[in-house]
Image (cartoon, rainbow, N blue to C red; front, side, top):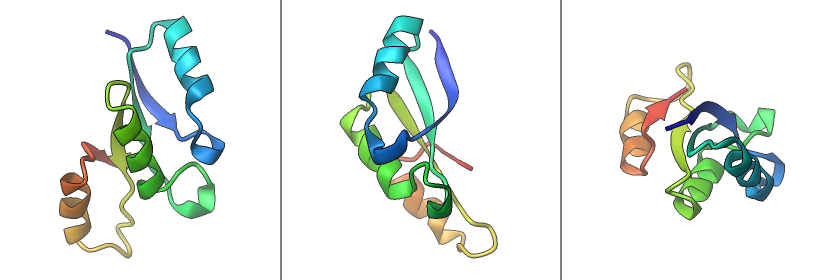
Length: 86
């Protein structure tokens, strides 16, 4: 199995081209990382939406701001299906 261990959400959240690239390269699953909104790579909500649409191709890694978020954020993201954190 080939896994892309670090992928960001494509601009606008359209993963069609990314999935075509994965298919050509034999990549079966990608670990999609959420980022703070200022970076424009997909926040937790966007990544969650994509992973729910393509659960066989992506797992979600959530973003936690250690200076602002409380430990409850970790539990919240786990409850939402995130399997790791950035």
